[in-house]
Image 1 (cartoon, rainbow, N blue to C red):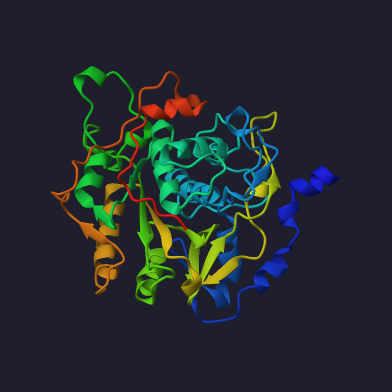
Image 2: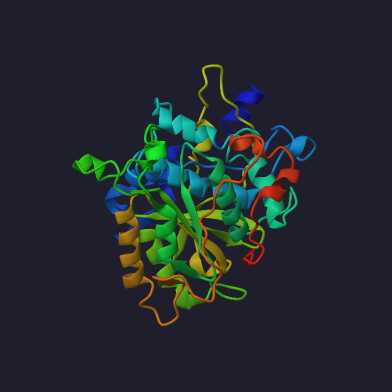
Length: 398
């Protein structure tokens, strides 16, 4: 009986109580690029929130590195938030933003495969094990708290080993997004004669092919764009508030990583000046795949009351996330940034066409040569020496 209660500990709050948390108002609520009118769409709004994958502290998983911690309670909250942002990108990548989750309903096989990427096992590509050990290369010991930029750098490196999702992960530097560099990284050249007999991965198929154009047109590798920012010294500068909120309205939005000092949250939207977030600070028991190869997902969706925080209470260290499945999505994002972000006198970040001449040359990241493949490559921190570490990148931490 105790194990059953533990398994479903986050389901205790009933949905009716959940609905009462939002007031009756004519204001719009924005959740990851979608708007909801509270007065008439409250149930739809809360269904949208509960559909997001929710990753929390876990206990009783295999020790990290063989002898390390078997729970991330107290230190893994930012890693869990990074997992949630990435999971939302993968949902958009395979199922689309409009996909919705229903409790105890059979889900697409892609959904199960996405979920398995994040299980707390060393052989899962985005597990707490992989993220913690990859963090060693960013100067963080296993069990040490991460800041939002550190998590972004970790996800960027782990994505190199994830062939199924085949994401291009771009982490901006010095508050600047460079269009030229992103297009260099995401545009995939036509296959050469040497590879003509090989079948390209699904992600290499362009939208142009559906329109009858040549299969050898340049394709677009789906883009996960992360923009780490410092929006003040000790607290967020109010001048950035409107621009920050505008980011949640963009259809490419993956929300934001941030929170309070040593307390990380995954922000997914806002109502007025209240940010709406998923809170990873609940400790649940490790869940593994079942005999039939599926994962019981009941503890991976939050049915509790949504958490809210006044935007002025936000710590100034944050990381914005965006997903652009196709090149036209990125072009549209650039237009929105030009219109809504760059219009401010004090800009939240910069968007430039060309690579700054005083920066080192941009080289798209490539998968390091290691003795094993896939997520199993980090069995010890010694192998991290093969990775190209970004020591010159400013590490933002809360």
